[in-house]
Length: 268
Image (cartoon, rainbow, N blue to C red; front, side):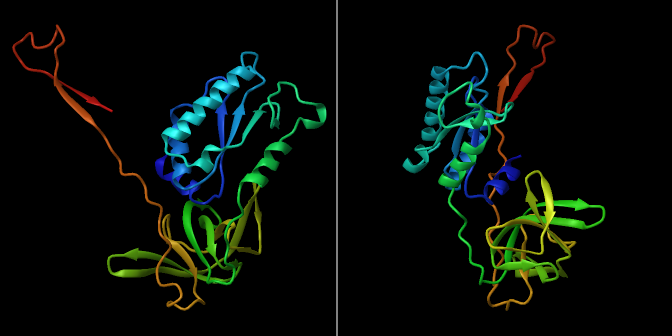
């Protein structure tokens, strides 16, 4: 879960933080928000389920205050603390910039949320003239296409039929994993996938044609000189796995009746 969140957050310029208007922020809210703030994103707060009878404007204000405190405790900057707030009912399919339980018939859609995304999420910084490079952030396998690599294009342009190679960094230096040709190039269109002929820097794409590169590897254009692509793109740094254990004598009334010593281990 940790790695997946960091890889996805590392591919985007913005985020929508969805919080239940009745329950407020939960444990997973803190975890994902911390990752978004770490990458410098400025999340948009969306208070969902405001159509529920128990949710009032006062309730939403209290939840908004809790979210603000959470931002502050996680070290948010002043710009990140000035987050936009919207109210929504995902079940009924509408969002509003002002609190309401029953929006007008012509406003019962997600247009205000989409407008907020356009206003507050900056466009990607893209260099289309540089050699093509893409960091592989996700991977899946298709029965017909083979390995499908998904990532955000860092620089350059890629087209179907282009020759590419996979790169990774090892102790001995840059290692070429495999050389191949892009056979399929795909983009997300809503909830479906659409085939495209080309894509450029800033786009998130999925490609087929290479069988060996994996998550964290770089896909680069073979036509670029190795001097221009000297090192793979930096990989996402994941938090190391941690575990804390408390050892103590079991002081239960039923412990040690036979003269033996028992211990308890508490794992967090």
